[in-house]
Image (tube, rainbow, N blue to C red):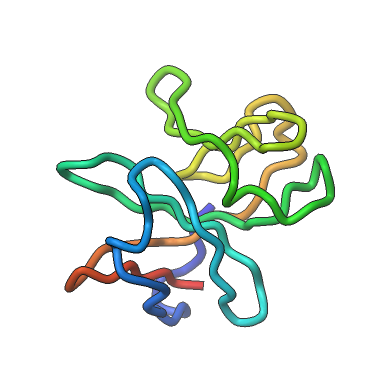
Length: 115
């Protein structure tokens, strides 16, 4: 779930052009690794979730494969292939292993994340 926006600080993490469409990068925000994803080419959207995969106990989600399951945009962990919803952080195969999601936006050609 997104946290209260009024309590969060927005941080510029990179230029949108630094992220290849339909892939992710890792950013360090407030001492926490956050996986930031760019989805779509012509009208890009950005998403941010924890980079740490609780299933494999490794910080790897930013290197996962981006795709969709039904209407949900997901990343598949590169280790055990569990799918994480990029909007909510929910692990589809094991909801108890879900991760935090963070508000993300594009402004001025930069990607901003509130964490």
